[in-house]
Image (cartoon, rainbow, N blue to C red; front, side, top):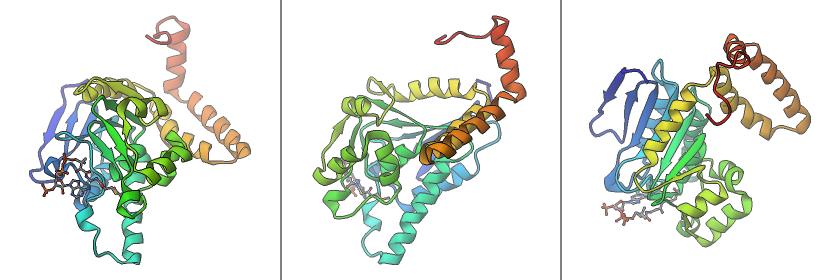
Length: 265
Ligand code: 1HE
């Protein structure tokens, strides 16, 4: 990591950012409201992922205080009519698409409550690291509403439709352990160690060839959503594009000369 550390403290903004070398740290910063996501929070995420600073190769989203996020700020929900409700949900879609299909891979660090819209934000990230304090729920069912931040599309891809239906119908809470077993998180750490693990992973990811990160972020999900015939064609095209980059040729040459790391190193 370079020493190019820039800390940007936007006092009173609901989301704070810090550039640490090649990493962008994005902190949900409304701990007094358990990082509930009001419109200002969602729009701040939009602005951050619309303009990732030059030189950043990977981002990490985490929450200040004892919780990742209590989900949608319910105090802003009360008197929105149907059409405005659709616009609001589409705004979440646009912003979380920017997280998923932006310029850099994003790791979410989950601890405490990761519920409702907080879980939807986490699902838009590329990898989730949780610590042992994390718990997951979709309280929308209990509140008489439905997920509106892309959760019905992204969560079944992580845990399956039946588990998501169970969470919504019963309000069931999933522990950090269970969440890691069923695929919400990909890494589970002791309490308070999630950010450290995410930084370690983000540093590895930053060292990848840029075409690999791009393909994993932008092409892989489209392959998964396509018909088998189209998906296989997309795979061949991106494989050929990647292997023809100077970066790939250099890496392959280093391996053949015995100068590259072996698997697992
Ligand atoms: C909130 C919110 C919120 C807390 N909107 N203000 N999400 C939920 O249904 C989850 C609701 N929240 C909770 O169940 C609990 O707050 C927690 C389990 C997350 C944390 O409990 P705790 O005891 O640490 O905190 P607290 O005392 O409940 O809350 C502290 C303050 O945060 C309090 O405000 P205060 O002014 O009385 O101090 C709470 O009102 C406030 N707060 N959560 C607004 N969510 C794109 S669609 C997505 C749809 C959804 O996300 S629905 C799920 C909403």
